[in-house]
Image (tube, rainbow, N blue to C red; front, side):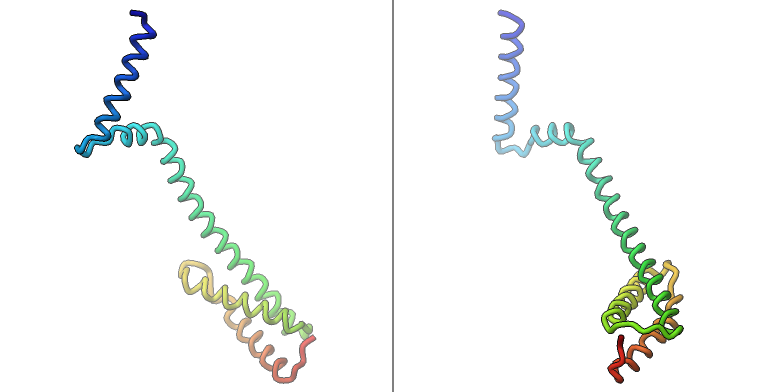
Length: 136
């Protein structure tokens, strides 16, 4: 009997044996254990990737809040200076204010409340312009 015949015959016997164990009513699943062992590195990599995605999403939301804050403060300076704006520009700034306030409420450690007075001024001017229909 040659070495290849022994290896092939032994390999086939092992596959048949493991398959029979898999089919038997005893709850032994050697294929799952083998699959888990083979894929452990892949599963670990996917877990780390999921953690990175969660962290990235948090960073993106924080950066969005920072951008909203900058736009709110800039817009506030412009309206106090007397620059005129369209209703759409006011509406976008009011959406920025809502997003920024919600983010600050959800993230107590985030630098917040720096736009509070500016936001109030923007809302006051918006209401005045809305009453007079006096947008750009």
